[in-house]
Image (cartoon, rainbow, N blue to C red):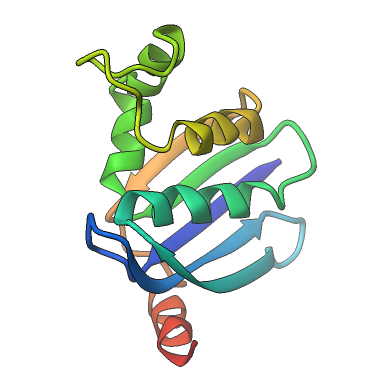
Length: 141
């Protein structure tokens, strides 16, 4: 099964602030793609909001296995996977390179459980057909 996941967050601050997070899940079918979208008002940091919406969206994916393409401007999340940080954190008991506890470790652990070893490709900063619609929906929230 091929799944595209489109993620957005209005929270850009490293300090906790209020904002809106949202997702669109697009599943390829024989005809038109099937989609599901949801938006939430949250109070979180930038990194927390990004992990939060990723995990919420992943929790809606019930059929396994799937090939997942994630479209988002979330370089921190993508880097954690592409640079192997998440594997190192897990191996080191959720400690970072400075031997300090990894921020949002419980959320990262949830991400790994929800991904369940499925293939993921990241598309950071790429334009997609839902972006303008998602931003307009977030303004209405």
